[in-house]
Amino acid sequence: MKIYGRITIYGEYLMHDNEQGLIMPSNLYLETTDNKDYKSEYNKELDKVLISLKDKGIIPSHTLKGNLPLGYGLAGSTILGFLHLSHIENIIIKKNIINEIDTKMHGFTPSGLDFESCVHQQWGLFCSKYGWKSQAPSLIDYSIIIFPKEQKMPLNKIQERVLSERRLLVPIQKELNEIVKRHNIVNLELLMEYAKILSSIGVYSEVANEFVDNVLKQGYIAKGIGGLYDKAVIVIHNRNKENNSDIESLELPTLGRVVANLRHM
Image (tube, rainbow, N blue to C red; front, side, top):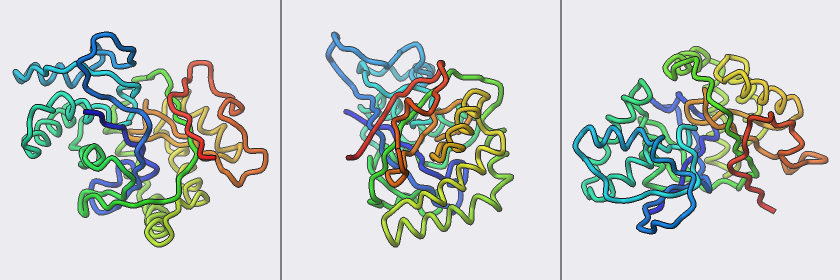
């Protein structure tokens, strides 16, 4: 079994009710394997889901491999749950176990987004009220960067900060959604506005915030994904921008690491 991670283009923390956010599958994945000679970024020592399952008396029989970094908002914990529980056919039982573990790990009840993204493995709009709605917008060029974790703030504090700016974020999100539904495109001007609001409310670590601010000033879209704080940052390359350059020109901090760089030519 192979499952790709998801990237939230927008909508973090606002999908728990009736505000749809846009989801894109990444090219980062984890999968089960019986091969004992393989190269992988999967680190069993970082697999908190495996520890939680063993505490429940569930002992997975598969070894995992893949290039998806754990703990960076790419749906890693839910993917781990799917893979470790691949022997359980009842989807409801599987979902309940995964949600219980996710709630314990993240400090709040999950919206259901990560579970649905694992099931559908494609572009889609999602919110808790309406569930998953598959979409097929035009592809975007992007890079995914991760930074060392600062670990100074819990995610429920980040959630509070995002929700405190609902009045600014929700109207943009609604307009983005309507354009996706009607024209199958991601409006980059609106997404830039959305990213600038997130950057202004203190939802990133110090090093990520410095990077995001710098990239935004250079005219590229940059924002955190997933839980935002201590999570991966997506940079969207604007094809229409003159002298559009690779991510290396964006003064990536020494501690940052590009884990995905997808260009559609």
